[in-house]
Length: 343
View 1: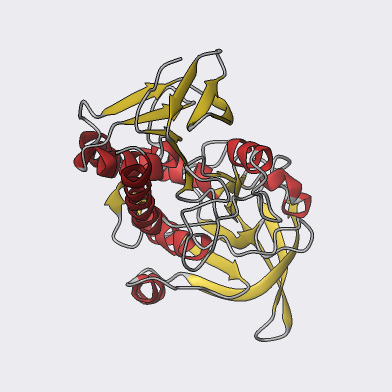
View 2: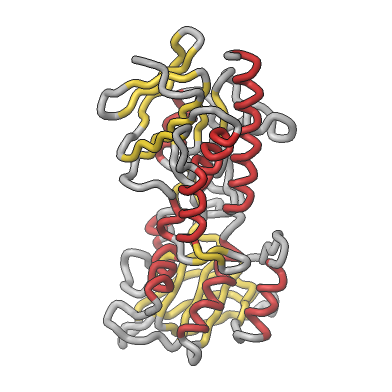
């Protein structure tokens, strides 16, 4: 085993690529381990980003270009399975048995979308036209939205907070991205299907970013999206193969029943399997399986282990802009650590 780099970055998504580029710019060598056959993480499953509908593929290319340096080694198909100390270094073992070492390790193992089959009352995996927001994004990227039997939907409903802020699933936290993702997708669906009616069921809408509130207003005023503050109790399949939705309008205190062609579940974020694995292995897991940093306020990229750092949505749900800023902060902490301990 030889020293692979100044820093081994586990995870080649937006956080990992951003941090690798920043380290290279400062003259440090980073090795990125990505378990998939291509880098980019969840950017590979997204078409446009909010709030400005920026092309996800373009952002991925920018991040890759920043890493196009002799000081960044990208290793795909390389799943890290163990991180352990070895003298003054950290040894990382890859699933195929290879080992690498470096004085620092950055964990950027990210999140996974909530598995909507766990909310059986919504009919995901049971009724063919109940889909997730991830599946809708793939349709939007292809420029064609169809039901499973090939029909063009005339009505689409969305359910917010699927797998977030939910006593039943045990995920009490907010996933941050779902509200504005619904607004973005409502606008894009209306652009593709001008005649379709759209209804968005929500607990409350959290438009917390710059220009998010403006997009929300635009979706109503320009695209005629109907937002219903309500709780969906159940769904059912009608005789003609459509989806019946039963809910309570909690603003008007009255029941709501409607039939739609397509029901979209806005799934939240959970720790990825790799995040859960390393959080447990390194004894720094929060109650939900995300990474627990040394101090949320002042040392959010540091851990209880000197030389192990964190960045991105492995710590908690984050939108991509915040993920990239967090990776910049992590790179700075790594540089400071390397200056103190290796040079």
